[in-house]
Image (cartoon, rainbow, N blue to C red):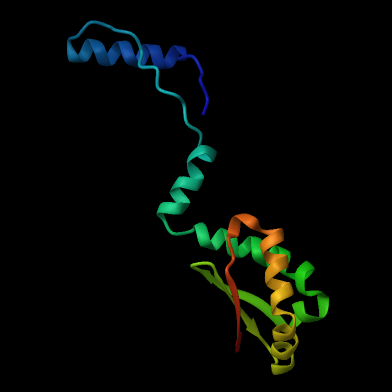
Length: 125
């Protein structure tokens, strides 16, 4: 939040509104000035977009976590209630990822602690 002083335009607007209402011109309300950046997280949470941002963060870290070869065959698909669903192109990728599932989950949790990933599930398609 920003604690700026009222500008000339704000003071003039306040005095015009006070004159129109027929009241004394009292002090300006000392409400903090909010920026869009301050409200963005609240707006996104209300719109249900909070998980989408986390999915994009996961997608950005996915190549580093699984490596270049498995990155070509897989993509994080959904992230809901702490469960990451990953789409696979080939059954061989499923086998390789199931062998490393515990390590992948641990690296995801270390890389993205704010995402609070509980489990990783793999699906073909």
